Image (cartoon, rainbow, N blue to C red; front, side):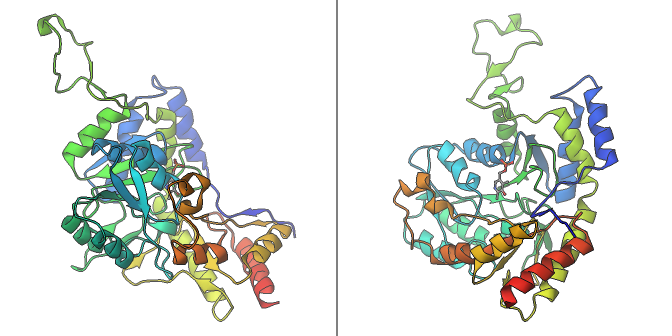
Length: 389
Ligand SMILES: *Cc1c(COP(=O)(O)O)cnc(C)c1O
């Protein structure tokens, strides 16, 4: 048997290919109708009012912070166990990044630790918090909202791992990740390894119309034809061509080609989540009783399972043993506060013990809808062989 099994993988169907080819032969390669269609469909899927498609997930994190005028000297909170972009988005605005340790069992930002950090500083010290639905496990936004209201925080949910995930709030209502009922805005990524692939791509979701309009403008240089200020001597001489650059924005546009792929992939989102659930269930059952710690389940939290992470005593050994057997597991993530770039701000080993301990033992096992039963059996067999030897 010869396998080459990655930890994650995109799936391109014939329908996907057809949709992209149609876009290529249409009048628009970018800024055409497929982008608005993707936004509309994605907003309906998540259950939010507004969605803005952008060039990648990092741009989706940057723009909401830019839209609230985050700037140098402001302070933003995120978690060390995330992709660097969750923190970098605040740095792009010149803001300082603070970290809050993870819960040792669910691996998402600890709400208790967040509360402790907030209490140590005067109200207004922190402008925003960027909690991450790590692995697809939804953070408890209801609790974070309470703190955010008390301390005046903007909540930007990093939902790059969690399209299709949800939590049940205290009123018993299902809250889809990124639906904007508790967070002010959320960011998604359509990098091929994520649930929905568009090549590069991202989406911002929100229920806040003012924020939505600002983000739309900032996506394309801060240029608009709406609410014109006519800082010109004679507005009557301006025609339909006239536009204004009112703010300093970026070119964070997505193309119609990518939106065509994203739209087509979105149609399979539910079956993808269902398959991820099956795979997770099988791993959990297979590892019962083995010396393996598995991410905690919570009845109020439906994990979208972008990743399936476990902790083992000899992580490096397992990682290398799996590679020898054609299984390319991955480590998510090297703690962000220990990156050379972030260490310059004074962060050091020992600052976030749960995150650092998790990092020492964690490994992400193959998790993607097209992982076959045969392949998963093989992964399970190899993992158990290593940890039981
Ligand atoms: C993938 C990812 C991002 C960035 O998305 P890109 O599309 O690669 O820019 C941000 N945060 C998290 C948690 C991610 O997994």
